[in-house]
Amino acid sequence: MTILVTGATGAVGRNLTSALASAGEQVRAVSRQPREAGLPKGVEVVGADLTASSALTADLFDGVDRMFVFPIDHGVDDLVAAAVTGGVRRFVVLSSLAAAGEFARDIGSASHTHHLAVERAVTSRTGAWTILRPGTFANNLLSWAWAIKAGMPIRAPFIHSAQAPIHEADIADAAAAALLNDGHQGRIYPLTGPQSLTRIDQVAALGAGIGRDIPLVEISPDEFRADVAQFIPEGIIAMLLNYWSDTVTEPDRVRPGVHDLTGRPGRTLEQWARDHRAALTTT
Image (cartoon, rainbow, N blue to C red):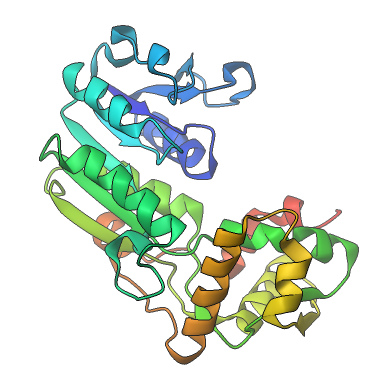
């Protein structure tokens, strides 16, 4: 049988597709731009925009028994309904820690609202689900890449706040384990990186990964808003500032999901920096 991977050319989906192919699984990877997918040989790549109902044909689900559900911007209800009708029997859902609503800052946030809707699109239709709720992605730190490459200081607010950034490959490995092994249905796995690090320590870990010191300058929330307002919607800016502010006094807790699913600790942030050296340096 075949595993359908949605979001197959994203940071998690690409790693997941490679992991499943390496395990000898038949994989159907969905991409809006199949010619640019660059996925492993033997993977069936399908060009489709899953936010369009016209893409949800019977052929898409032919022979598929398991599915990785990427939290697409809209249309996930139609996608999951079509998958259930098409015979998919197991779903692994990529969600977010914000969906749990553990903190006041999460309730009603863009991430909470969106990811909870994605979860419900699956859980309301089948009991054969596993939900992965990663916290902050290490990939978010690529927003600092331009400054790092240019040798300029990173400008960041709340530098004493602490998060546990997770490597996207660990999320992919957790998803692969949930897709390939029994015993995970009906379970929710919170996922984080293996260490809760202040933003000062995060910059130091990136520096260690690329082999040089990276300067850091603390800025105010208003300065941050001015720096990013043309690139990031105000709702997301507010969500980020609330998150960083809260995690000054209550640092992110390390969650056990990666170890629970894979049997090993997650990759460190320094390892993530080594893996993304090309994006962080000019050499």
